[in-house]
Image (cartoon, rainbow, N blue to C red; front, side, top):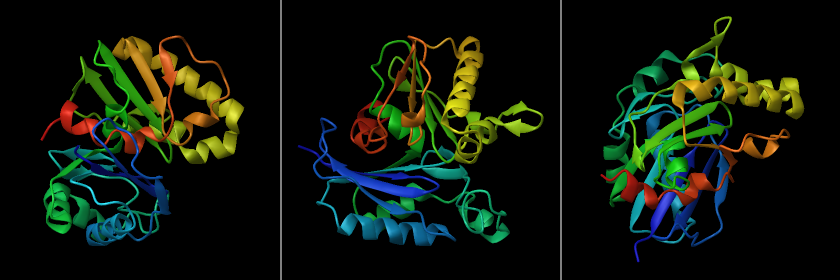
Length: 246
């Protein structure tokens, strides 16, 4: 049986667990706050430290926020900011993260096979059934997204950065800051409104709403929307290798 250390890297926390090849947890997930400032070298160091407290695994899956292409960071939010989400961008950190080959660097650090994807894509790997078009939206510090067609991962689109209204993005409208400002009920109604607005764009067969804030939704969702537990972010680490491959 192959085991996979899965690390879900968010703006507010780093969550990790070891799963087997049936996506069953081999240990209780652990979570540590995301440290800032966070240059790539520090992230690698922190992830190695997390791994030391977990059972040994044969391979590693890491989910990072932002545009990750073939294991290389094209752009990432939060980690380029001086002190994390909603603080000024640090030009030096921006330069360090842009083009960072996360898969290669983490592969050298862990000395075992490593797969690096967008965090919502790893989340989705635990959820998709492989039938039709399946969209995954994760609600957390910001908005994450992943699209699967018949179980195959589509090219990543940073839906969160698309303008929504008055120059503000989907990230701005659905992120944690807005949830706190609006309260769960008003924020939930906003999520529902945006889901209904996106339906004619994607024409999905199934939409999964996950991430840490999905459990805060307090309005009923349509039949084609499924709410999922946040543990999918670590449970998907093994299946990602099958669905997405190397």
